[in-house]
Image (cartoon, rainbow, N blue to C red; front, side, top):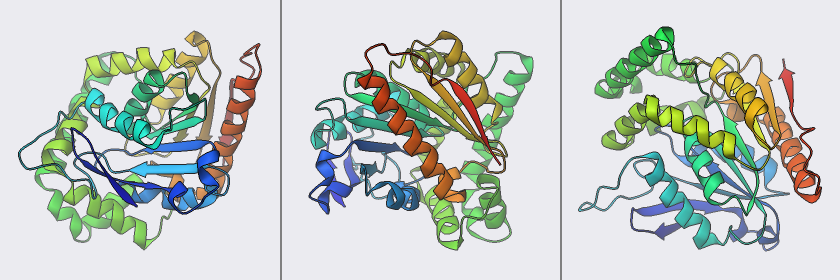
Length: 308
C-alpha cells in the first residue's frame, strides 16, 4: 500500500509487486473502480489472480484514501479520471512492453476504455464490466432522466443508507447474491463518505448523452480483445446495455469481443461469485495473450458464454 502524488491528488494505491519480488515480471492487471466506491472491493478477486498476475488497484479522486488538496479541485470527468490513472500507469512502469490488462467496472468501464486507447501499444486486453450502451429513443431518454433524479435523491439523503432497513436495501440493489457483511459494509461506507462533488459529477456524466456517444465510439476502437461481462440480475445498471455493447463491438470492431453473462448475479460479480468470475477473466487474459502472439489476428474469440 502506497501513495503517489500527481497534479490531481495524493493517490492511494496497492501493487502486489511490493510484496512479491517475482510480480513485476508478470502481466499486470489494473482495476478501475465504479461509482462512489474505493478499491477495497477487488481484494477477493486479487487473491485469486495474484499468483499469476501483478495486480494494481487505486482509489480515484473523491473516494477511499486518496487525498484531494484543499486548495485544488480536480476536474471530475472521464478525461480527468483517465489522467490520474495514466499517471499511475507511468509511475509504476506498466507502459513498458505489451503486458497490461485493464478492467473497468460500472463507471470505471468508461475510464478503462479511455486508458485502453491511450496505452494501446502496451495493452493485452480490456474488460468492461457492467458498463453498457443503449439505443437512443424516447424510452431510453425517460430512463436516463429517472436515473438522474435517483442520483440526486441518493446524494441528498445518502447518510440515511447507513441505518437499517435502507442499508440492507442498498446492498441488495447492488448485489443479487450474498457478498458477506464485511463487503456489504464497505459498499455502504464508501458511498456515504465519498466526496459529494465528485460522486455527483460522476453519477451525472455517466448518463450524459454526449459522454455515452463518445464512450460507444471509443470502445469500438479498442484494438485488443475486449471482454464484456455482466450480471443479468443487475438492478443498478440495466444489463441489456452490456449485451448491446457486445453486439455493437462484434459488428464494428476489428479485434475480438466476448460476452460473459452471469445469469443469477447482480452488479458486483467479483464479490458475488469470485471463483467463477476469476476463471472467466483468466480465460480472457490467456486468449488475449494468444491473440497478440498470432500475427494473423483472427477474430475467432467472438462469442457468448452464459453462466447459471
